[in-house]
Length: 95
Length: 472
Image (cartoon, rainbow over all chains, first blue to last red; front, side, top):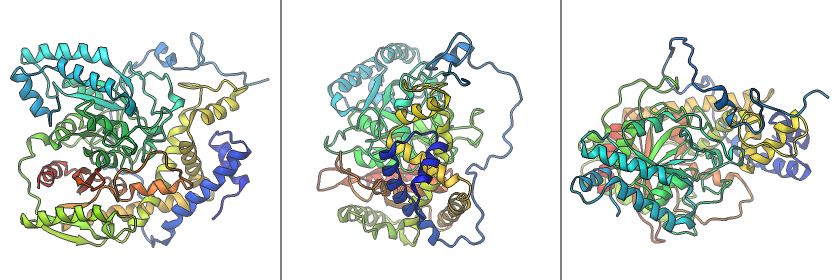
C-alpha cells in the first residue's frame, strides 16, 4: 500500500512529531520505500502460525511487594529541563 | 602496549611489567592521540586513574576481582550512575544516569575500570555510526571507512587499542557487524542471558548487551561476569551461568551447517565468499562435518526485523517528552508543542522515521496486516532456525556481505542500509547467541568477519568453537 500525505500528518501527530510541509513530503517518500521493503513478508505463507510475542521462557517471575525508595525526590527532578522544588514544570496547560 | 587478552595483562602485572595505572594512562594517551576517530563522547579519565590505583593495591593484597586489570569502554546507551548517558541523541544531552545498569554494576564489582562512553548510532538505530548526533566515528583501520554500527565507537575503541574491551548492544547485528568491520571479536548473547536493566531501550524483545574484545577469552570472561538473573529485568534468565572463560579449551562441536543461500546472495563480495570457503575447507581438513543448509528465507529477515523493532521503538521512545528529562525545545508554547517540538528537534531523522513506521504498523486497521503478521513470521523463522540445531552444533555465515564501506555516502533510500543486517538479524529474531570473529584480511586491506550462531544458551560451546575457528 501507499501512505498518503494526510496519513503521514496523522501519524506524526500520534507520534508527537511536528513535521513541516517539506518534512511531510520527504517522510512520505521514505515511509513508502520502507513499506514496500517490509511488505515482502506478505509472500510468506503463515497460515496456522501463532504470533510470537515473548522471547523469554521465564514464567511468573515474581518478587515480594516491598516498598523501596530507590531514588530521592531531588534525584527524580534532577534531569528535568524545568522544575521547581517539588514538581516538573510545564508550559501553561489551560488558558 | 597491546595485550591480546586479560590473561596476558594479569601475567604482565604479576611479573611487575605493568600496573592498572600504567594501563589506564596508556589508554588515555592513545585516546588523546587518536581523538580524530571521534570514538569517545566522554572520557572518565581522573576517575579511571583513581580506580586503577586502588585496584593496584587490591592486586598487591591478593583481594582483587576477576576483572582487575581490564579497562572497559561502554556504549553510550548503557547507564553508569553519576555519569552522563545520551544514546548519542540530542534529546538526552546532559542527561545524568541515576543508577547503573546491572551489567556495569557486575563489571565494577569484579574490579573492571570504566574509561569512558563511546559514540554510537542514535538509540542504536543504524549500521554505520553516522546516525549519531555527535558526528560519525572513523574506522581506525582506514579512516575513510565506517567502523559499522550501531556499536561503531565500541568496536573502534577496541581496534584502536583505546581500551581492552568495550560493551556494545545488539538488536539486529550492532555488535557483530562493527566487530567484523574492525577485525575484533563481537559477542551477542542469547536473549535474556544478560540483564537489560539500564540499557536504554530500542526494541525490548531483541536488545541485548554484549562485549567487543580482542580475544574470545576476554569476551568469555566479560560475559561470565555480566550474565545471570536480575530482579530488575523479568526477562533475564535465572539459569546458572557457566564459567565460560574456563571452558574454552575443549569443544564438542562436530557437525557444522552453513547458510548456502547467504553465499549466493547478490550483494556478496566474491572475495568474502573465498575467505569463507577457505575456513570451511580448513574445518573439513580437521575432521569436522561441514554441510550446506537450505534456508530460502533470508530476504524475509530484515523486513520482519523492521516491522517488529520499529513498533517496539515507537512505544519505547514515547517516554522522551521534553518534560521529565533531557532536552526541551525553546520554541514550545504549550503542552502539546512541548512534546512535539522537543521530540522533533531532539530526535534525528532516522529515529523519527522508525517511530513513524512503528506507529503506523501498530495503528488501528493496520496492526493485523503488519505487526501481528510479523510476529507470526518471527515464530516461523525462530522455529525453522532452532530446528537446524537438531542436526548441527553450530551454524556459520559471513558476518557481513562485504568489508567496511565509505563514510558519507549519499543514501537516497533508507532501506539500502537496512540490508547491512541481512546475516545478523536472524539471531535476534530467533533469540539465539551469535559471535563474529576475524575471518581474514580482504585484498582491500580491510578485515572480514565470520559469524557463528548456536542454539539458545549454548554460549560455552560457541565460544570454545570460536577459539578453534579463529586459530585455524
